[in-house]
Image (tube, rainbow, N blue to C red; front, side, top):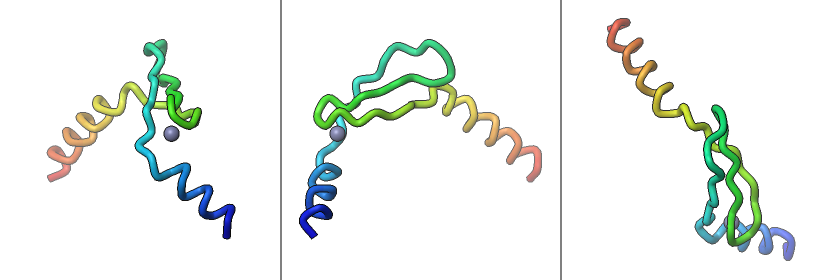
Length: 59
Ligand SMILES: [Zn+2]
């Protein structure tokens, strides 16, 4: 029970991601508050655009 409360508390804050400069398709980000690490995709917007194009052709 106490462990679950700790987990909940850790996820309660809005992660303050410090994103490293893009050096490829992925950028490393670290939360300034809790130290969590996450990889951010730099090409997500491009991928969405291509998906929209394909959807228009299919329709
Ligand atoms: Zn955090």
